[in-house]
Length: 85
Image (cartoon, rainbow, N blue to C red; front, side, top):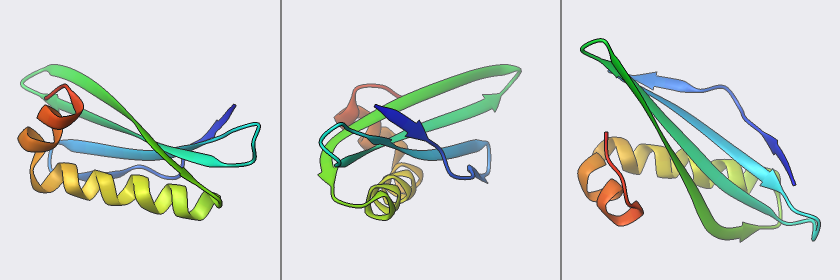
């Protein structure tokens, strides 16, 4: 499985890095890292998504979308995915 990350984007204290993984089947899956540096403490959360995509572009779009979902409601998103900053 190969992983490639596009450019991260920063909003406020958070840096969002969408990425995708290439599987042997030829499908792609998405992942997301959210990092923050607040009060001299840093934290990074990793999210891997189960959805499979036929193209790299769709996998990256999904990861970017999930990053925006996280930014709009990090507490609810992180409760669903199991962690919070």
